[in-house]
Structure formats: C-alpha cells, structure tokens
Length: 116
Length: 113
Image (cartoon, rainbow over all chains, first blue to last red; front, side, top):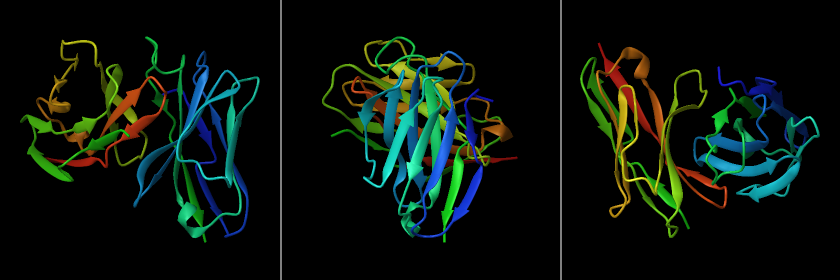
C-alpha cells in the first residue's frame, strides 16, 4: 500500500458525460501527478500540482482539467467523454517537486474509467 | 523530446534464475532521474528502483539492481533469484528536472515455476 488513495475504483459512464476522479496523496506529500494508461498510448503524464499550484503539464486534453485543494487532495475532471478516454487513471504523489532529493513518486491504485 | 524504449515486450524466466530487462532512453538533459516501476495484475504501480543520473554507482534494492550506462543511455534492470511474485509488467521511466516523466511501453515478465 503506497498511501495514495484514489476514488472511485471503477467508473462506467456514457459518451458526452463528465466525471470527477479524486486522489488523496500520502501524508506529507505536496506534489500530485495524474497519469493516463491506455492500451494504445501506454502510460502518459497528464499534469502535476505542487502545493495547490499547477507545476507541469503533459499530454492533457483541453476537455480535461485538474485542481489541487488546500488539504492537498486533487481532482481530475474529464468532460465531453469519448470512447477513447476509457483508460486507467493513476494519481501519484511525492514530497516535493521533481528534481529534488525527495522526488520519488508513489502511485495510487488507479481508477478504471469505461466510457460506453 | 525524451523517449524511452523497452525492446522486449515479453520475457520469461525460470523461478530462482536471473533475468535482465533492457531499457534505452534519449534525453538532451545532463541531469535526470531513471526509474523502474512494476505493475502486477492488480494494476497498481510500484516503484522498484531509482537512479540519479549524476551518480555513477549503480542502484541496488535487495534482489533488484540496475546497470546504468550513461554514455550509452542504457538503464537495464537485473532481477536475481526470481520469484513468482515478480511476475508483472515492468516500466522504465526517465524524468528531467522539468517534472515530466516519460514511460516506456513496458516489458511483461513471466516467472516459470
């Protein structure tokens, strides 16, 4: 158990809908990262927050957005869902931003999103 | 742009034997980090080992060790005394100081009893 929690574990929804995925980082971790893992694209970095501020952006679609709240939990919002958005979405956390001595990321169990 | 290549989509090893998973990467940075993550059937991502590029000494973590060749941009993972619980997908990853981490496509490791 990494200490990172994600809810829900599974989510089934229809095209065009909007969903919110939630992540609680490990106690003391200030950075939260979101990843998408799909069969065709592999594991891709979406976005990172550090202490409430967006810090780095990867291959995140405009239909997707995220935020990190004062209690450091984070939410990933996916809207206008398409079939191709079906994937496993991971959240990871670390103590500090990458590039510091404590930059190991710890992954949550993931949320399996199925878009029908 | 960074790339990570894992040339072995699948590998098998006999239990208690040693296996090496290959990874090559490309980055223009001189300072970066390398990781191996394990993803068992539960789909959770588990950090196996990490290596700072500025360190010449190869990282080791119990039965797991790496062979880091910076000039060749190679970062292979050696698993000694393979156990049934090592069966998983293994991902190699590289991360620069810009906080973006790039993963390889993964190598599925089978452990034969």
